[in-house]
Length: 152
Length: 397
Image 1 (cartoon, each protein chain N blue to C red):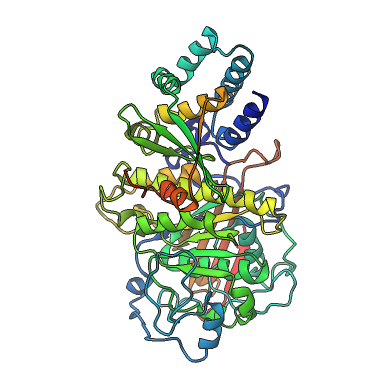
Image 2 (tube, each protein chain N blue to C red; image 1 turned 90 degrees about the vertical axis):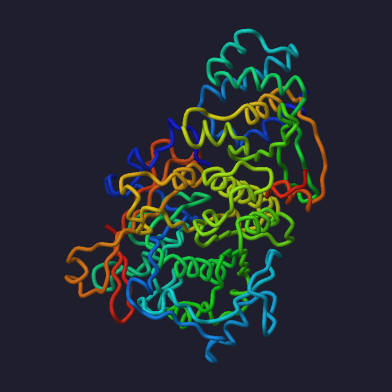
């Protein structure tokens, strides 16, 4: 669990610079509690809902479904892939917030009304809970995933 | 890296323009690394503005051919393809630079070492510390200390910068940044452009840096034709055994607005999403390459990114409300830590200085986590004078 915690901190460290302090603290608390009890207490779930709104429950559903995978290639490059409710794959980056889903484009980018979408939130939660799936791909496959030109 | 949170992100509509800020304090920290900048450029082509005919040559001028060959990596074939989708496989092909031909062909530049007498065109390839270095070296000969280390210290380095301003200056500036980084700092540069670079600005042609083929071979030119190709090439940089320390993309707007809706497989159509994907990929790639360079103990770390962008507001689209924020620019601002704004001074200041043109150069950026808690956010203002004979001078305001 400690190694998972360390990995979690490293992979999420760069992304966390995009979070407000309250959200960063919340993920830290979730991580700590989950490491100790394998549960997220109700007060943290309420805080999660308060900070992130409706996408919090949707993200927790994705976590329950183990929908987040960390892809890694021989070069050391990594990326997250989240399986959406429809089965579609969404690629998110390690060091900054981006998701190709319509909710991110509309709510975050265009309307500036949200911090992130459920897919990015699911990444944070899976990393905090150390339940991210791991998958190795080739360097060429990684390039295709990052550029969004991978096949269906 | 700067937070993307709306609350902490100064949006353009909220007064992002550094012109509203006070002049930089003398306590601004000096930077030592390379600071990328996104250069955004007004949409009117220089030739259109000045009525100069476009000059296109079939091949490089003879006097430049040896230098150009030296610039290429690998050595170019006699009739190289116009574009390539393979990262790092295209060198400089032709020599005519129509966008800057009439512009100040000569400016005086001295490096920090003081041994480079070079005439350089406008310089705003904002890697903010390189930018500051170049501005200082191009400072007035009469009014300021020639010592590049004099004056306010460079702002803290930031990994990505966005330049918004006059388009006709952007490519020459980016080229100057590339040449300076490759020759003077010895770092590898990946330069992406949609249209081929056919010549170096004249000022660079006389520069001793361009006469150092070994240094210039560190620049890899790529000409992706579409946004998809650009994404593939940037995404593929992690595969390179010798990763670049500086990633330059000329005219993001050309790539973003040329994308056909729906042709981007697996992503939501729309300018904002495409811009966010490209900017995020650029920043994530720079972050990854920084890790790689640091692990190798390379002095070239960190990896920086510079991109030029032409906003709709500056492109002369009369139908667009001048007060409206460019949505693509707003998205890009989320990912780029610093911005350099180029604004032409249309008052009599140029005439008063016996210059052909005068420009305001504003450097701005939010504080990054590594910044001193009490330090100011990045904010610098320079004045650029372009003289008829090509001489260019920067003055710190």
